[in-house]
Image (cartoon, rainbow, N blue to C red; front, side):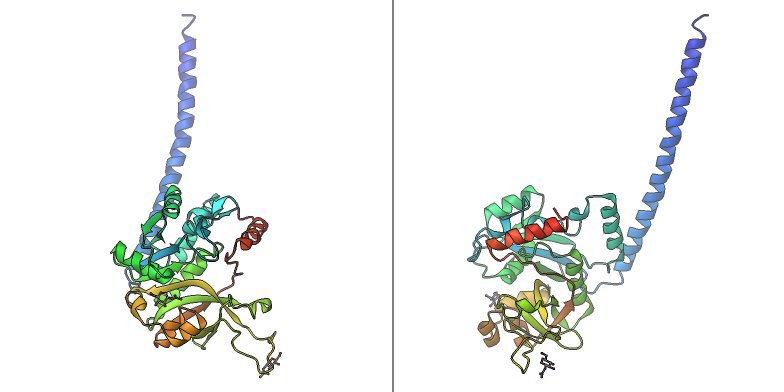
Length: 325
Ligand SMILES: *[C@@H]1O[C@H](CO)[C@@H](O)[C@H](O)[C@H]1NC(C)=O
Ligand SMILES: *[C@@H]1O[C@H](CO)[C@@H](O)[C@H](O)[C@H]1NC(C)=O
C-alpha cells in the first residue's frame, strides 16, 4: 500500500508530460500543415500561371568551361576564397543563398515573383576537361562533356544542347569568368528574350567606368531607344567630336552573359564569319551583321571579370568586403 501513490503519481506525472509534449507536437503539426498548404497553394498558382506563359518558357543554363585558356590556363578551377571559381555560379539561383532562413525566404519570394519559366529550369557545366568535370561532379553539379574542337563558348553551348537532346526554348550562356554575376541579371536577360519575340539573342550592359573607356578588353555597346543593340565595339562608342571621353555621356559596358533562342543557336555556328566580327574579334557582331535583332537590358553591376591571375586577388578582397565568402 505504501507504494500505491508512487505508481499513481508517477503515472500522472508521466501522463502530464506526455500531454504537454503532445500539445506542442500538435501545434507543430498544425503550423506545418498551414505552412505546407500555403506553399502548395503558391507553387500551384505559379504552375497554373505558367500554362498561360508558354512563349520560350523552357530555359537551359550552360556554363561553358574550358581548361586550356591562352591567357589563364585552368581558369575555371582557380581557387577564389577556397572554392573553385566555377562553383558559386552553379548555386546562383539556390544554394548560394541558403545560408539563413532569411536567405531561404528570399529565394522563395523570388521564385514566386519571377515570371514563370524565367529562371533556368536546369543548369549544366559544359566542358572538354576531365579535371573540371570531376570537380563539378564533386559538388553536385550537372556536367556535360563537349568536344575539344569547340572554338568558343557559343559552340560549346550548341553542342551541349544537341547532346542533351531535350526540348528547350532558350539557352543562357553563363560565362564562368564573372563569378559575382547576380542571379537577377541572368533572369533579366532570359525575361528580355521572352518578352521580345522579334529578337533571337539577349544580353546585358552596365555603365562603363571612365577609366575603362580605352581598354579594348572592355566591350562597349550602343543601343536604340527600344533597347535593341545597334553595335558593339572594343573602341569607345559613341565617339565624341572633341576626341575626349565625355564625362557626361552614359557609355555602356557589355557584360558576358547572353541568351539565345534555340532555333537561332542551332544555325548560329554555321553562319559565316562576318567582316565586322572579324575586325573587332567580337562574336556577337555576327548576329547583328546578319540582320538579327538583339535585345539588351541595362543592369546595375560592377563588372569584375577574372581574365588574368592578377584579377583573383582583386575579386577576393571585394568578396571579403561584401561578406560573400
Ligand atoms: C562632347 O563632349 C562634351 C563634353 O566633354 C560635350 O559638351 C559635347 O556636347 C559632346 N559632343 C560634341 C558633339 O561635342
Ligand atoms: C565562335 O563560334 C562560332 C560558331 O562556331 C563562330 O561562328 C564564331 O566565329 C566564333 N567566334 C570567335 C570569336 O571565334
